[in-house]
Length: 447
Image (spheres, rainbow, N blue to C red):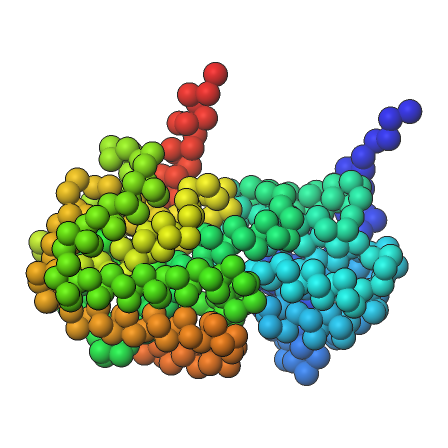
């Protein structure tokens, strides 16, 4: 007789979901699961318990005092904590895990997370981890959700899949190793580039949207992506960069590409620069049709933080974007291979580089400007130094240095972050709607 799988309603009557760590993503999960009908219990730092009773008084999930209580009660426990703290917190609460319960985490690097679970959980516990590839303020519908089934039965996986179905995300099953390689491929260089942009603008005490040189087109997207990164918490990016060995390799290569391209620019080596960048273009964008780019002038011009009307586009070397594609080429990465696991930011950023490299003669114009026009030379020098500094911080593996550098730049842009985040949300929605339209059109062509 064939075994009938339990319905979501039956599972909800049987299972308790636990969330350890009620930061932004932990709260997102706790709210969505409890609103969908699951019994959810959660906790944050024990010293914040009295404060959090007021903070979460109107929530549909139940607040407990600590992770021991959550672990003893829940059938699926999700650790939603910073990557640098995962081992310590699992070592504290893991031994209290309910017999036969499933445990997972939300960190952006699964290697250390899985190692923490294997090291501190009782052997009867199962391991299925998650990673929603978006921030807590992004609509989960249609976004990638990676499920890492490390130590679990088919029935365990079915239960977790039923739980997360309320998010309406695109589920992607990967191993921990596959997850870490792909997230490095799609995020490490993105973060390094736009962290460095923010640091460079801060170093020269300049809001880019207040300077005519930085207004319009690609500049709008650069500013919006950088501000969106700095509107989040530092640990969102530090975990992936520092704990993922693949990310180290890529950030260091990106910094090397920036330095080498800048050297060619100031040395006037236009022919060498052109040959190098066209090889990178042919490798990364060989399949891209200019008439089917993700971004166009209408989208790029629409979302500007500048209060001035858009004027003509200013010539720019676009060193930061050139180095992204150059580093991909040198690492043998074709970003489109992992588009199923891409974050909203990555899709925008890929669209921007695609636009620069594949739109008419824009790349050759950019190369000529980089060699012959010194207008952006000072900006490019500061950007080169910033990318080198970030590469050093990440290679040192120093979370404290990362936090200090991030928050120093964040403080500089603080007056504009609320407005920038709102504008960035609009831009992301427009672009993701366009992505979905393209995917639907492609699916319609399949017989």
